[in-house]
Image (cartoon, rainbow, N blue to C red):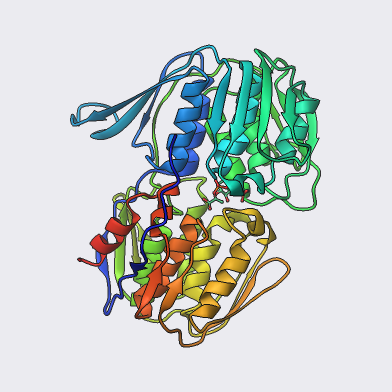
Length: 443
Ligand SMILES: O=C(O)C1=C[C@@H](OP(=O)(O)O)[C@@H](O)[C@H](O)C1
Ligand SMILES: C=C(OP(=O)(O)O)C(=O)O
């Protein structure tokens, strides 16, 4: 079990009082770590993950794979002669997948969506359960598709958790149509296990829109890196269609990139205080949506320089509003909204209706919490209008959403007396957040 940390006392968000100047080492990417774990578990030989993210979502993923029979050995290396350098490394030893087993998904979208297809390949029943919020998050695209591809699944008919996948040791696979407008993770889930389906998989998205395309590109890139053959719209294929050929996957030695979405609050700190923050190891090329921050936060008033060492982001002292479609990079919305609430002009954030079904209803939560501090935010059909007003201190509720906690911390840098309820919820993807934040401020 990887517990959802119990709410703690109110955390006084540090007020900056001046320009920050810091180097922040951001831990590994959640999205890369959890894809790498799944691909390594499905490979035909052992593999390594170096600098994996150790957080609630990734420990839930590792625990679930172990429950199905996969070996995951956690090692810490102090020798820089080891490839990938010093730090933590996980060795993944694939094995025949089997049940009975129970998987706790917590509130991790990656675990609840990526693992039912893996369970369909296991021999025996795999039961999936999670936090109360996980029952409300959409899973119908994965459940319906797996049934079309040959899986037997018992659920309560609502298209969500809890459920049991009765794995038969193999899955036919083949073509399937899904509506992934509520989550790109439906597509990623089917592609990740696709090489192990007897006929591979052809996923055709039929919905009106598709969020988080960079995350689907991440899936395709990582599949190719372990030897899978994938046709995608970007590689000249049909729009909205992905094809994965059946075949064995290689065990690789992968060093996980820093989580660029978790770098967001630190870059925001440079922006809102007119300071400077350096994030070492920012990749020169990446599919992570957080890379869009270079452009978004530059438009909002900062400037950045990407060097061999990392990304240096500098605030100018001015923070501007922005009109931006965040559909591709929805997980950046809470942090952009927090900065927008401190800007010198209004903002419109668009293309993120699906955030209503994330960790919490993020559009409602951001509106309520910023307005409780004196802000002027309204929800639109697909996003937020934010008209900056002088804010005052108060309690910022997080709704068990890690990105609400970090959004509140950004506001707290510029507004005295902000207290974050349950900052421990950042453990979902960044357990070190409070320490990294106070460290950045030199406290
Ligand atoms: O595949 C992934 O790793 C993710 C995809 C996105 O999900 P949605 O498409 O459901 O927004 C993103 O918001 C989430 O944080 C991580
Ligand atoms: C939406 C998010 O997470 P999940 O993987 O649970 O969907 C997120 O991290 O912002």
